Image (cartoon, rainbow, N blue to C red; front, top):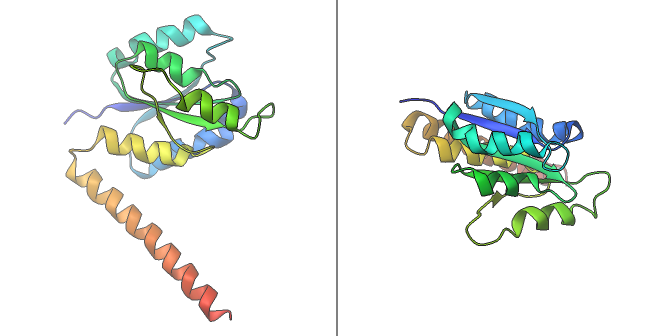
Length: 165
């Protein structure tokens, strides 16, 4: 089975602390990815070229993070046949992140962008893995093990809390 890459793009290098979470989870699942900075406003021609050609370069899913007006995921989704996962980022000029959330979430009909929570690039990475490898039994098992690990962490914390009383 050919392994498609995930492309992680962000509007600014200030988004890196959030977007690296997507890269870390893709590393955990051994999924190849690339990362880049594209701006829908400052490098629109480059963003358009990326969106129109990503599928030709072996990309299977795009994770696009942006803060403020957060147009990057939408412009990519409008031009690409690939699934796009938007990560709203609370930026320094943000209105508590709501501007980013609503800019990514409220796409017009025909331009879908799957939207995760504010600063939730880790969830975007997991969703990208599930989209790209939904028919790969080995990865499905690894995702199930990861979810079981999350369950065990919560159960452990619950026991610790009860024991501390």
